[in-house]
Length: 168
Image: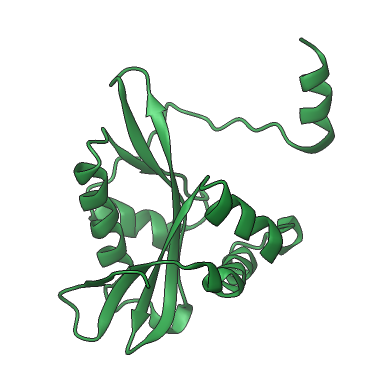
């Protein structure tokens, strides 16, 4: 059983996911994708998540529960900063169900990840945000997060990734 992390918000706790949470995690991912208008991009399955999170340990998930009911999740993994010479934590997804937003749950989950970043002697906690998502951008700014204006994300996937992988 995963350890429950008590927060300062009454009846809101955080815990690390367990293998039996895979269907819940996939559901959260699909809800997030719908919110971001990216549902067509979700190809993850329960089997893929089980292998990636619990067998290969490529990522970790924390789940936020209010009154014992899951209301949000955060999926993250370690990266590495050559400039700092230290690992960091990259937050891939943070999602709180719409009806539960505005209660401080997202802030508490980010605060916990910041604490975890420090406990693991990592140099930074970072994430990406869609540029149209003003409410999230404003939320992150209110926490003191800096928008990395000078950086642009680049991505190679699918057939382009396969083609690039053949050209070495």
